Every structure is written in structure tokens, then in C-alpha cells.
Amino acid sequence: MRKLLLFTCVISFLTVASCSRDVESTEVSLTEKENLVKQTIIEFNNSAIKTGKYNRLVSSVSQKSATGQLSEVELEELVQGFLASQNQAFLDVYYQLVTLNMTAEEFYSIAHQFEHLRLTTTNGLSKGSDCCEASEALEQNGNPLGFLGKFVCGCEEQ
Image (cartoon, rainbow, N blue to C red; front, side):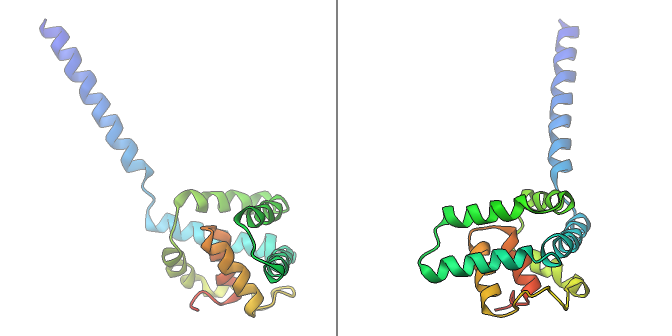
């Protein structure tokens, strides 16, 4: 009977210890978040900005918004089309960023440490209202592309 009780206690202890380690390991440190945001900005510049693909997304969102109310479904279709044209390195860090469920404020506070990564030439990307409005529409939908776009367009403080 003692052996059974001891066995039950050991198994219970191991289960509790295992569960508490899982909770600790899922927390992401600030340094890891900073590295992820930095890498996401770099890959976004390489995959979306330098190639002009984000500019095309901004144009599509602006055109559809101008002709009427852009629905969430239409916006999601545009985003999926945009993501389908991106390189794998950007997609990897983008989906890691999505998994973190980072707020806009948290993203911007980290991103401002990497101001030097903003491109001064953005391959025809208008830094005006179209870029900000399209990025705002994406951000309101909870999409980190909106965070990235507003950061690149320089309108995150508006």
C-alpha cells in the first residue's frame, strides 16, 4: 500500500512539475520579441517593400476603399494574395509575430528601437495618406501587416 501511495505521489509531482515548466517555456522574453520585431522589419523590407509588393497591396486596398466599404472578407483575400507572393524568410517571421498576439503599442515601442531599418527609398511606396489608410485598415483588422505598414510609412503616431 505504501508503494502504491509513493508511486501516486511521484506521478502527481512529475505531472505538476511538467505542467509548470510548459507555462514557463511559452513565455517570450523581451529580448526575443525585440529580435523578432527587428527580423520581421528586415524581411518585410526585403520581401515586400523593395519589390513593390506592399505598394501594390496599398493600391488595391485604396482602390477598393474608394469605390465603397471594404469588407473584412475582401481585405482578408487581399492579405492572403499578398502573403502568397512573399518569400519564405518573411513568412516565417511574420507568422511568429502573429502567434505572439502583440499589441500595436507593444510593437511600435519595440520597432522604434530600429528606426535605422526604415528605408528612405521605398520603391514608389507613397508615404502619404493612401499608405497610412491602407495600413490602418489592416491594423484595425488585427493584422500585424498594419503595424509593419504604419511603421514603414511613418504614420504609426497619427
